[in-house]
Length: 373
Image (cartoon, rainbow, N blue to C red; front, side):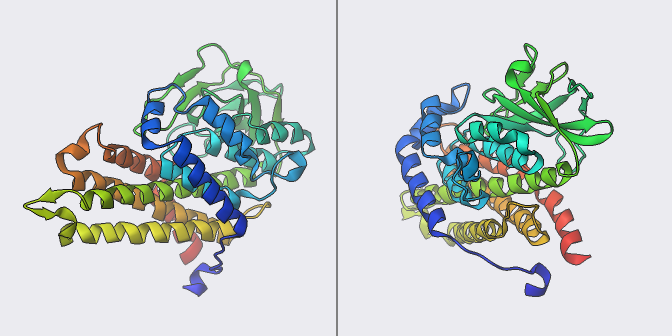
């Protein structure tokens, strides 16, 4: 195994532990399940006041350098916070804003410090990447003129309705580029909300045609930055899925300990015990994969070992969450398919987690090339 994977480093720092404890406690108090269900009925999917408190805790600046008002802890320190958010099933702009900050930092230059300061201070930003639904495509179909005028649209743009800044991936003079577009530059009606299988999430199709970018990032740093964005996004999606799967298991175990059938607790049946143990093992393995990847992250372009780790974390966590959500519905029986039962939230989160930032087939194809060629 060592000869195939290379580095097997895994660490969990004191800072990560503190961030996880604070995040878990904060979200248990501010975003219990009944509040999450209230958020589902809102346009944003969260409370603006809650977002403000998350910003006050410094979560938007965890990964950014101290020179722009961040904590300088790196993206690895965001992983426990996102895992805690997944455990709470909380949808918020944190993942989108964090990834936008990482893409801007890695692809930008000395002229972007002010924007990074804004992001660290809680300005909502997002990356408009997908032209279609395929993470394996080039996704540079949108065109950008030399004057910074955009033509084209992007689909499934996270937090598009709240974002004040869009990092739009496109092509300028035949080369990949990233246009920095203010929300105020969009035409009226440019944002069309999507209907998603996971009701805690918010995305939209955004038509950028006619918008003028405040700046366009080009050059040799763009492609490596986009590659890292996809990998870091896969890792945060994996961390979120791991937290959600852990919460799903807790709900399953509580039900198995209280529901009786034929005069016996259903948790006494091996047909339910064994899948529950499989989920537990899957959660622990997924968590190990996530923190292994977090250990290997760097502020520079990610190494081959880090790429392997991010892809493996996404595969394992996504599959674990999808399996846990499916078992939650099955174990709850007829009520498990109803909206009143929380298992429906988990099976929906499982389908979202499996697909976002590339499904298992997408990453396994690339892992095969990295590990076996």
